[in-house]
Length: 70
Image (cartoon, rainbow, N blue to C red; front, side, top):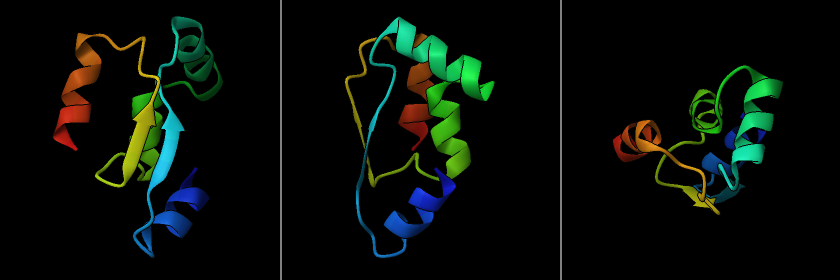
């Protein structure tokens, strides 16, 4: 993801990412990366105005704060 961020953000391109599309998807991301999808995108430098997050069906209240911050 860091490589994607580097190549996409330098020329100011947008990035589309599936984010918490279901509770199963959110749990799989957390199990694989030891953090949730929002934290993973933030760590990679992708959470910002160039991100188009799609299918956010499994968000909860705690997910709104970091999304709003960016």
